[in-house]
Structure formats: structure tokens, C-alpha cells
Length: 421
Image 1 (cartoon, rainbow, N blue to C red):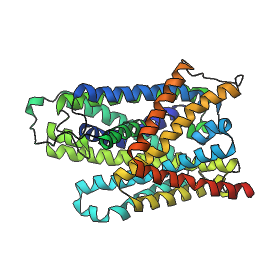
Image 2 (cartoon, rainbow, N blue to C red; image 1 turned 60 degrees about the vertical axis):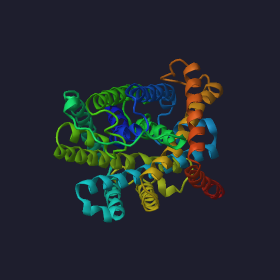
Image 3 (cartoon, rainbow, N blue to C red; image 1 turned 45 degrees about the horizontal axis):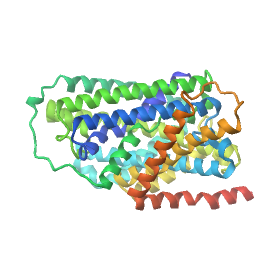
Image 4 (tube, rainbow, N blue to C red; image 1 turned 30 degrees about the vertical axis):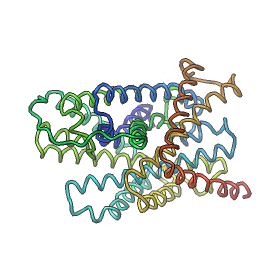
């Protein structure tokens, strides 16, 4: 794949459901514009710093397979297997989450579809699993087109909202801002989820022309672009409609456009949102199965997971990922799947930052085409930040944490079975 694919998968992988729905979730708790914008900026800068640190591992690891491939050498076989297992489960949870939300959005346009939400969500995710079974080339083409469209949509929406006269927007009765530990837990989870995907290149690193060092630097550039787009859009939202008008909206961007232009305009945003989320189904069926493929290459998954079809895709791994995603669609709705996804990938980010410190100590002379800027200070800041976020989320959402721990615990008997074989 060409090196520009790193920009495509990173920008296209990060921008999605979070920015579509997130402003309404956060505005339900935070009504002060400066604090609201500050949270988005602080979250973006923290993710950028994490990318700057984590990209060192990306440059050191010219193979595909995601976080597992980046840090297995730092943690050893079983710990590496657990990280790969959790990372793969986070993909399955995210696929399920976005399939569910696609149907929620379609139900806004076609209310009759609401009663068929679950079977239709399964049908949507099945279609994109089938696309990946056709081969890598088709999936890559879909993603390049989708990412270009996403960028145009975000910039276009921001420009439209910037030129809206706030005085012309009708106000509505709004509920008081939510408060409490659970509310702030959802705010943090929403921001983390919205910026998730900052090292998406790691899932395709072994297939990128130009080398792992170029992929690392491209990832940093891509996150910088994402932060700029997010801040542009959020400033436009605050300036046009205000936060109170968006509070609790399931699709804040559509609601903002409806208030600013006309109710009919919101339907266009819903269609754009559905298309954006469909592109994520495509991308996640490209990335998630490659984790199982990497585990199989190291003897930590069934060898069938490493088998590649004629189109270049890991066929068995795609099928297993699809099966787990369907199971999660049947289990729960938006909030459960959002928090479950966050519980999976937040500890992974923490493990990755720790992995940088471990490999700096164990392999000080290893080739590093890119070195983390500001190390060790930048790495320690990221370590403290991700540790606090992990502990806070685990305490605030204890019930969801138990689900995540239970699904992670299944990795031990699976690993022991594979080890014996």
C-alpha cells in the first residue's frame, strides 16, 4: 500500500461516530463554552503527545497486527497475547457499536426501521465483512474515497455554521446540566472514543511502502489534521447554536444544522453520518482481523487465522471477527458498547506507553527510525495520564468493567490450549 494510506486510515479511522454524536453527549454535562472547547483541545493535545511517544514503537516494528505487534517484544508471549486478544475484542465491540448506531440514524429518517434495528445492524456488518472477503484492494479504494468525503463534510459543515446568525436560531427549553461521577465518566469516554485510532497505521505497518519510520511520521501529521478539524467544527457549533441547544442530542451536528438552516437540512447530515459510519465498518474489518493474523504467525492463534485468501485478506480471521461482532450486537445498545470499547482500548494505550519505557531499557541500541520527542518526560506524562483515565473509568463504570474483565479472562484458557498444541 502507498504511504499516503497511513494518512487515509488514520484520519478516516479517527473521524467518525465520536464527533457526530459526542458534542451532544458532552454538552449535556458541560455548558460553559470555554471549558467545552478546552476539553476538546486538551484531549487532542494529549492524544497528539501519546502519538508522538507511541510512534517510536511503530517505527521499530515493520509488521502488521496492531498494538500486539508493537509491544509483544516488550511483554513476552502471554502478556502479548492478552494485549492482542483485548485489542481484537475492542475492534469487534466497535464494529458492533457502529452497526447499532447506523440503524439508530436510519430510524430517524425511516421510523419503521426501528423495530428491525438489530437484524438490520447484523445485515449491515455482514455486508462489510463480505466486502473484505473480496480482497484488500476494494477495501482500500473504499477507504480512500470515504476519507476524502469525510474531510469535505467536516470543513463544509464548519463553514456553514460559522456564517449563521445566532440571533436567528430559535431556542428551546433544555434540562439542567447533568452532574456526578457517571456523567463525567461518559464525557471522558466520549472524548477518548472520538480521538481513538491515533496509531491505526500499526494494523497495516508491514504492508506500507516507504518504511515504518515514514508511517510513524505520517501518523503524527494525521492526528494534527484531526485536531484542527475537530476544533474548527466545535468552535463553529459553539458560535452558532450554543451548547444548551445541543445537549443530549443523539446526532448533534444534524440538530445544529436543522436549527441553523432548516429541518430538512438535518436529513442530509444524517445521510452523511450513515455513510461515514459505513466507511468505519469497512476499515475495522480491514484492521481487526489482522490482529488475529499476527497472533497466528507467532503461534498464538489457530493457524487458519493466518491464512490469506486470493484477494490478500485473512479470510478465517474476518469470519471470527464478524461472529463476535454479531454476538455483541445482540447483547447491548449504544452506551454499553461505547463504555465496553473504551474499557478495552484505554488499558491497551497504557500498555503501549509502558512498552516504550521497557524497550528503551531492554533494547537501548535497537534501530529506531523515529525516536519519541521529549522522552522520558513526554512518556511519563502519557503514562500518568492514561493511568488516571484507566483507574477513573474502572471505578466510575464498575459493572461494565466486570464485563470487560470477564471477556479478557477468557484469554487464559485459550492461551493455555494454544501453548499445549
